Length: 94
Image 1: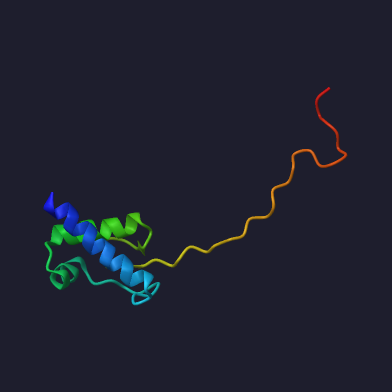
Image 2 (image 1 turned 120 degrees about the vertical axis):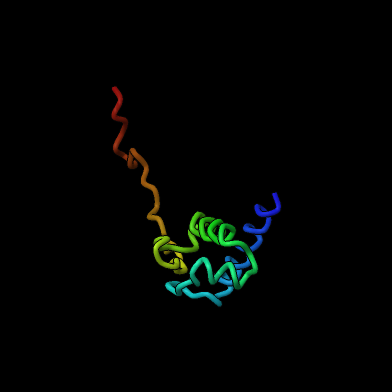
C-alpha cells in the first residue's frame, strides 16, 4: 500500500507545479526514467504517476514519448436555455 500513497503524492506535487504555472501547457515532461530519478521513485511508480496525471487531464501525448502538459480546457459560456413552448405558442397536446 505504500506505493499507492507515493504515486499519488508525487502526482499531487506535479499537479501543483502545473497549477502554479511552473510547468506550461505543451511543455514536455521528462522521460519516465528521468522522472523516476528526479523524484527518487521506482520506474513503475513513475509510470503510475504519469497515468494518474493523464487521468486527471493534466498531460497529453503518447507513452512512446514523454508526455507534455495539457492545454487547459476552454471555459465556454452556454447560451440561455429556451423553453420548449415559447410564450403564445400554445400546447402541442390536444
